[in-house]
Length: 411
Ligand SMILES: Cc1ncc(C[n+]2csc(CCOP(=O)(O)OP(=O)(O)O)c2C)c(N)n1
Ligand SMILES: [Mg+2]
Image 1 (tube, rainbow, N blue to C red):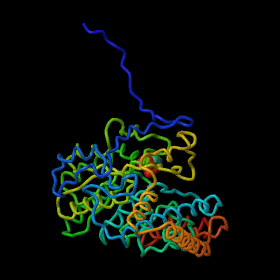
Image 2: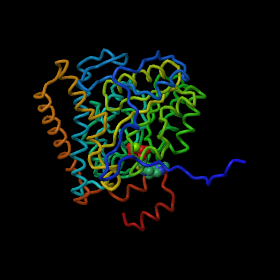
Image 3: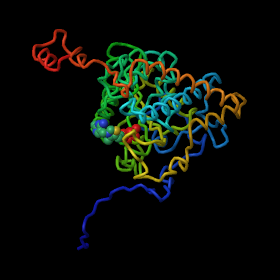
Image 4: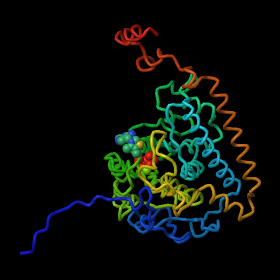
């Protein structure tokens, strides 16, 4: 009889911790230009290699290589670079405003700007995103969203379109295809699939794009969404942003060790790609591929965007407690802004001088928007919306018990 050994569990651990460098070889990178580009009507099972490889276009010298290097109008690339810069500047200023106690809470997308910005530019008007709190780039990439209004939401002030009912950052812009953000993670995926199915039932031509983080894929809603998307071939793009961390929890604890989040899609019968999320050109090309597939009734696509959450999870988090301080600097996929900038300079479509000018101009734009938004109140000056409003907008006729509660509150 074979000897019986005591059973044990495996608990994944990150290779790096404060004071100990991360060994990023766990990421399994592919060289730029190496991964094939299948036709949009490819069979889901035939995307297995793409779910384990890494779609990359930009190499370390800023050259665009391989089958995913689409001929993209240079004006679109310049627009994308400026939108990423604007997003980073916006985040930096709002972080300071939070430290000044003007905003109760803030979440940056530092290091992840390419994903939301390039995706926004790849979608069509009317498509509906179901974002998490780290896709502000979907809004900041657009010309029709007023930063003043966004900042009023953060300040929860008189002009907050959410009337102070949502946590700062949890924006809602139906007109810009940006569904109200739920704090309950993973709900975005089932909502996106449901919206996409409804679009198909109505014979509409607009597609849905759902968002989730590596950590939140461990929620049951992720798997439910994949099942429905697969069964009904829902017109939806399923974006998994693998930024390596879920607050202080390493992505391996959500199931990323020894496999990929993109591979989950293949297992469910969904065409899946694993893409360099810090490569603007790769994000744009993969988003276009998935959008065309969904729009042509060829079914959903799942895309794992490999990136790194360079900042703290939120203003309530201190990453120096759980990961090396220089982790982002060591992350092999680099900084998305620096990479697109290098590419544009390499093709003669940008310069250091233009970059500096753009930075100054965008900073002035964000600062002006902030000054104007603060005129309608900040948390620091106590100029908030009336508490009476919390009783409104639920019932057409206010029921007696709410009327009584409002009276008790004296508002
Ligand atoms: C259903 C649910 N569980 C837990 C939380 C608390 N929570 C908020 S953010 C977060 C981490 C999410 O990490 P990830 O999905 O990787 O997204 P990231 O913050 O890295 O963008 C957790 C656990 C929540 N908001 N909703
Ligand atoms: Mg994460």
